[in-house]
Length: 101
Image (cartoon, rainbow, N blue to C red; front, side, top):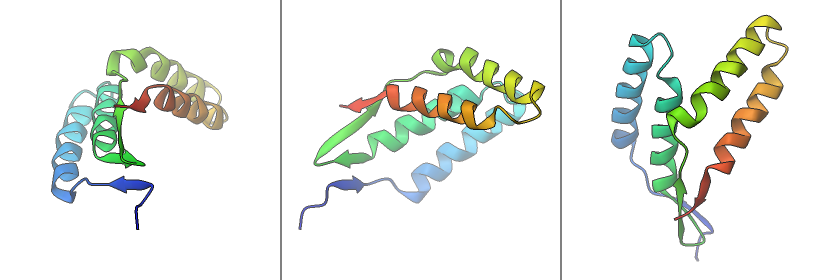
């Protein structure tokens, strides 16, 4: 039986990615997060197939940095009330930058 969705990533591959992106994010006090998340999304997409077609993530850290900064500021000044809207904005950026390879 052919599966519509297939993920071929390995635990060790993701562990290494998670370690180095987390370390850099902590060292930079969170400023590296957009680049870390972009790297993680690229890895996920490069290991994901939909009906035999590989996904590709084209987003970049710099492409998300200022949007992410605005989300953080709005979440902070609204005492977290902006979180649902910020999350939706975040997911829109993610899906707009995901395509078939």
